[in-house]
Image (cartoon, rainbow, N blue to C red):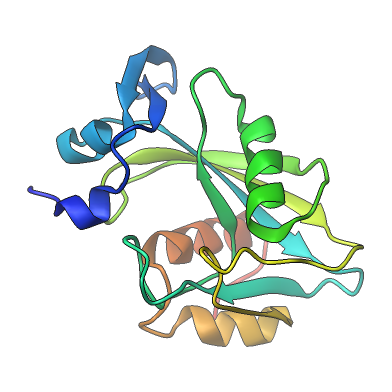
Length: 177
């Protein structure tokens, strides 16, 4: 499969290439990992408010990956040698301006629409106002789980995030609608 350069993104982002057990094989450029279908690590965070609502956002139209699509997680690639939890906290600060220590929930090997990767999913309760980075987030709102379930069925929802949502709901013993 050939992946367009616009989707691959920056060519200077180094990541750990990992195997089927999530053990490090070496350091590679993320763009190369995507082009070659090599596994690497992605850390994500599910943000809840004090009432249990979940932050949902829409990606800007001009971004290379999933433009204009909705997501229920913030996150990105873990840097070389960076543990999932540290990457999740860094991404939370970069994308929402929130300084917190997300709690690790689970990880799974995601086939990915663009390329395969290990996805580490974390949770955090956000008690402070968020300050979204407009280069990452065009719109956001706090949704109840029933509202989120309805949105996940929308075709404009990031497909990999839909898989993570289904796994998250199954883990918590809830059924998706």
